[in-house]
Length: 453
Image 1 (cartoon, helix red, strand yellow):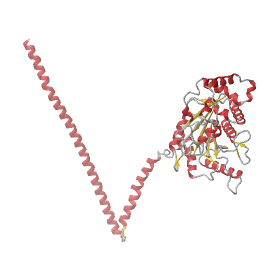
Image 2 (tube, one colour):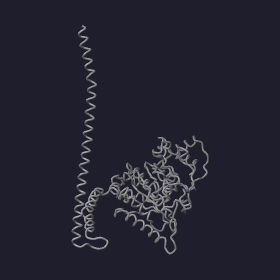
Image 3 (tube, helix red, strand yellow):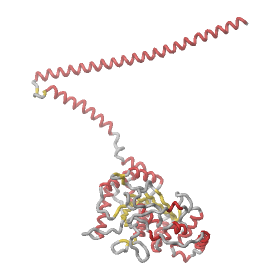
């Protein structure tokens, strides 16, 4: 969406919030929204918008665009559009979605509101370049996260909040969990820090449909998520497969390939510590602007081009939010599951066992081996007896030397203590002698003054 078009719809507060970015072919944001918009004066915009709000009546309930207008107007009048990033902004992008998609979104949000749920938080997790930021852009239908061809992944977790029709949607975009060939532990720590005071209703774990196997790094990332955030996080997780329009390889049907890919990921997640009752539903995602569309203008995927992936994704999110309690991060979980902090009380016991083994077993075996023979063969009984006597004498002499060394060190220590005490006493005597003459002189002066009187 261009900056001018977004400004006319009341969704832009500052120019820097909508920087122009370049998108990858497979993960670019929908560029068809960049249409030329007729220039209208600001006064005319306000009058038209206010007029649109006043004209909302009972018949307008069938039109999703007009249903979301009051909430948007209220947010703008209270300073929502020009407020800081932490303040919820109006969800203007929803009005640019196809009408069928808008109706689907509205029905799903109404389901949540019937259950007294007016807020929804979605956490995006996954490796680098899996389409997390692009999925956030597609959900909001706004350019809320930058996605460029050669851009580094999101530096830190970013909470994006939008409100519409009395409902607030929060999407937390996170850094990629892969650093070269290792798990990005700093990214996981930053995510855990973000979730300390933020309950999460749904976790969307992003991977790609056009990948054929689970690598070692994938398994390590899943295990790191379990160890850092806890196994309960998988209860609220949806497996999101980006590049959803990918075609199955030769020799396999699309359904067989898709089912195999999904089951492989589920098996890997359960092997990483997910609880057995975690359902792990799947949603297919296609963020590319080249995605096919139906007659209603909705993006569709599948062999028959009949799967409206965006409403299906939102339906999965709402279903998980209603069926599972919100995930609350517990910092103590990571400490308990950290292998470097478990059973540390055993370390002193292992050290004591090693010392005892060396002193009472290994040393005795070596000594016995030295007195019973040498490199030329075993000794006779008389030689063994003599060697034992010699070894016993050496031990006695070594013990005597140690005792003498201890006594010598003790005497030296006592001498040092005595010397220190004598130095302190001498210093005290000298200070006392210096003070005595002064007191005598003062007393003589007092006596002479009394005699003169």
